[in-house]
Image (tube, rainbow, N blue to C red):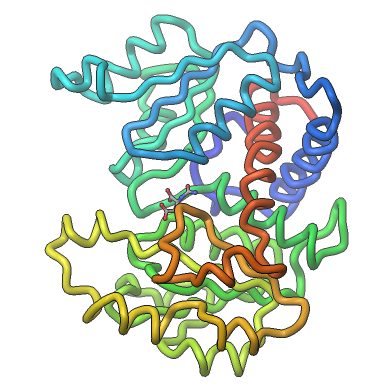
Length: 315
Ligand code: NCD
């Protein structure tokens, strides 16, 4: 694996290889000295054209724990604010012989273009492109699900039911999740108002419901993932995706009543950042079923595994 651009590019064995490697990485992160020499002498650039807290910090931590040199690039304060193109930015990095480029961009497909247009020889890892893909997020989600509900190293998610609820339309997390979880054998159900589902969602490899209470009752999910309502993308499109926050949280929020009706083993997930009180109540986010903080911890291990496998080609 030279690049990781799309969760759909991974077959079952490749996905399991990354998840297993991430478990080994996680073990090293429980030690007092967390740094490994694996990427010593290599340079990773974090190229984040879109805002991020946990993904950026997590990639930076992962690269540093592998002893890579890390350069954080953000367009504010760079020549991008003078109008420099993506191509010229990447050519500049190529001239400096960086070995890995982690990229987040508002344009779907930007990481693919960086990887395949001959601008650089670096390994490219997609850290979220537009509404398209966020493969390391779905890997950290799969790792978290497997830790709670799976059968350990070497296993997939066969037989597990994952429900993803909310703003699917704007969510690269949902797209990557459907791709990866189904590759790993899970059954996925998407739940959202019709206005927050993408066109042609019926061709996706998953079930779709518009009614959360009914879907919870019929499916009894093992993992319930709440998505952030992406208001910044909605206002850019002129708004009007749902009547108001009260109605949204009444119909699609994970509140106390719905929390109480979940199966005893069901875990609650959220990729962050959360809108507490909108798609998820504080009780659900902070309660005993919540694995949200563990998702963040697993993010470092997964990104260590991905950077390592992509940049060394080794196991
Ligand atoms: C997600 C993203 O940026 O796609 N967050 C993340 O990476 N943890 C989801 C979101 O912004 O809602």
